[in-house]
Image (tube, rainbow, N blue to C red; front, side, top):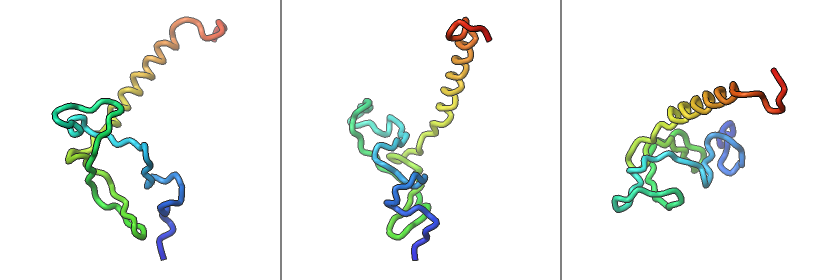
Length: 106
């Protein structure tokens, strides 16, 4: 009997195990070069993914992605955090300029 505590393939749930067409995988631009040319937005690329089997459900293996084209997956969380902090700081600075919308005081 299969382990029903884990989401089963095809259940249509929103669990972390699902990978859908259109999901994003961060890859180094250099690892995607073809004939020495970096790809542009919208270009089709082929990516070889490497990883470790995390768990198996029936005939489906769930792989923890570790590499793309032989290179480690870039850690984009730091860049995202820096961008979010920058946007928050800009928002606060703009918030302190002038009157609020509608001209009413605080």
